[in-house]
Length: 416
Image 1: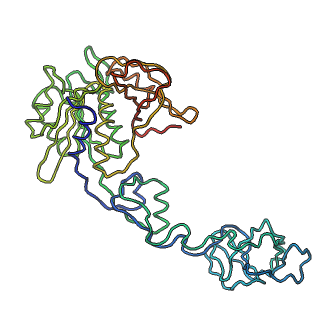
Image 2 (image 1 turned 90 degrees about the horizontal axis):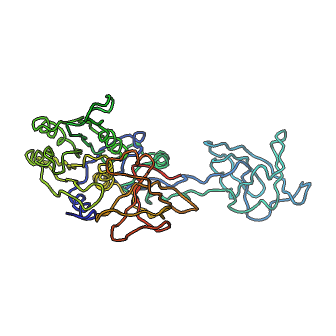
Image 3 (image 1 turned 90 degrees about the vertical axis):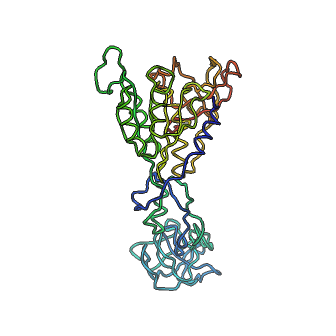
């Protein structure tokens, strides 16, 4: 039986990078950039004002003739420059232009004096008194190329595009993107005991919680879910659903992978031409995990037989499916593995590494993990209180409060 790390390595080894596609910038949110992008022009593209005020030239001391206060220089205002307007007058030491934030600096200007630091009367807009202390070269100006120089790196392939990336790309006039195609993921729940979650309970039956959970996990992974519903533990129905699932990039089946009389999934996958890579991982929950690949011409489908118990299915998705989806998408994401201190003591039962549901929060600037009360791999109620899982090792023995453990957040959850 493989360790978690060996099983993950085997999964990643089988992942082939997904194809690329082009789309408009406005459709790029959360998509994975497939190529490196460089800055097409300097930013800002011209010298500009950082404040509303007056554009002046500081080289020596401006003329003081006519100044009422010797601490102020009184200068004529020769024009008003609003954002988007091209200045028409060259500034020298004895002139000033009124200027607005973001406007192009007039020739000769090397200082912007904020209007609130001046003595200026809107009724006499042709003159301004500027304090000597504000006449500093390069004050409140931003030179061309200060933020970025043409040809420098802008965004790297593998970046998951966020609103700030969209804004930067728009600033540089990049309106078409080359991104990785989102993986399509078929989801099939198997088992005679399952009924749709919208239906009332019946004796001996349970609602299908795995399918909506996995669809939500797939969506949170920026992939496209394809729902195949429920397949009964019957060969012909299972075979039909498997053929449909193998048309996608990924195929997730839940249930039917253990050693019961009706656990038919592995043999039916084999009949369909799926090559088994491994069956079974040394972990809890999730031990029965099955993984294989299906190849038909240029098409490859990665197939995961997830355990039927919902917490097992949830954990196996986060540990194995999500990394495979990221690899397919070419995403360079920060690792989901973090370290937190336990806020309460806990004990590992059994001889397998345990992925214990925990409530992760920030306390005094550090990550804290509180083990939730969890009865078994079918205990979905416990996961409602959790937002991740902590790795607990049986050889460690009892864990005390305050000890550091490795944790993984579930889905796209963020810590407040």
